Length: 242
Image (cartoon, rainbow, N blue to C red; front, top):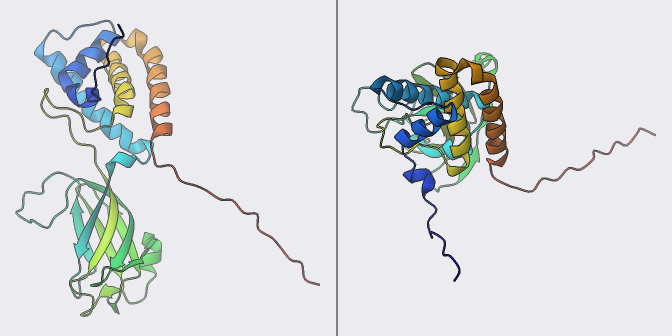
């Protein structure tokens, strides 16, 4: 009689923080025995997630939102933390960067905006000119991310939207019974990375070995992350003057 399969694919969501910590400690040949062992591991896991933000774009952390335009207001603010201590129900939290944006009119027709640098924005002669926005400039601060539009929205643009895609921060670990805010593809490198971080504190003789394992697991996960699409490369043809 053939064995049956589980019929489930939920391991990444049932694999709680305390089990991830236990797995990481086992990889360095230890067991978490004291409360501080768990606390320091949770802190290391939070730091690991922040280090991933420096590794490039993570497609599961891309989200979409809209900003309602106000006449004469060129700068709009999103917050990097989960709360800024205000009761602003229109605020967007956990934003790390804005990837692309479009002006959306009352007929829900989008007009792509061009992302410009600080130098390009600074070179604009009259930043208070009002009209339909065509460009935007993003500033990334410690506690917030701002998007500045040019042209500044005028009376006919008020009430319309800037629709944008942004990079979210990976959620903090939180309670030990929580699942992590990562897809199943990153579970292996998450465990390997936490073991590497813990080895620096508890088993330094194994740090180099565990670092190599972690980097190998992470590169495989990053290579698999993303969205497949077709690409076409066409050679450019030059016609000499005759």
